[in-house]
Length: 331
Image (cartoon, rainbow, N blue to C red; front, side):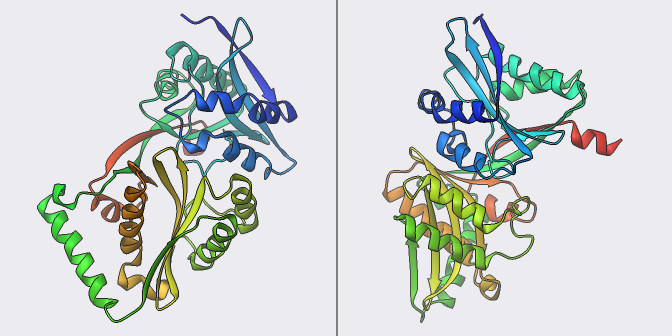
């Protein structure tokens, strides 16, 4: 049993933890995704309205060392993960983030908040994480419900030969259709490498965006630009595919190590019959494979995109949502 206590840092104190101790916690945690990086979290913390308060829950040893920490935000009477709903992978960070006793400390603190009337809505918690197990255990007797979700990850390089016969046929059909439709046209794939290209690429992606295409991502473009400008081109990119110099599909992704996660995708409404999103994904997967990447995560399994995601032989990663808000609304 690791002896520890929980400290709650709020406001400027929470930002100081993110700016100082967080980078070491992130470096010591191989299971952390880019959504637990200090640059990502600080970028979103700086976009919070004045009425919202950043919170860092820190499990601290008897010597004062932070063993694991969880970044949250409180707005009015609601507590969510910091950077939600944009983070598709939410968990504490640090060398003891998955230690059962430490995870239980976080879960019980959230339970106490909910029992004091605070609405908790913590989504996209990996089902295999210590926090998910602790939330599920506490959820059996608490005032919130725990519901399962899924995220999609692809192993690189993509191997069409490993797909089922029906998936192989569909994969071949999509490729042939795409090549036939663009056979006599100028095709170009790009991935941003510099901050100016990253921001310009996001502007294109934002223009291609159709209402309802990004569920839960109704964030002003200027806030996204500020976040991307903070995290920089080394950790984020926009990939685009153009036909006859007209961009028909774009994807925004972030990187940690050899793992890439696609956050936002958009395609030209007039070119949707061409399947440019499928074609762009093939180009991006080859590009990342050539640079030594081993995994490409497509994020949440969105209704209406299961076929699009399933055609690539994905690894379905379960996530958990612990919510007192949804339960209260359902009563």
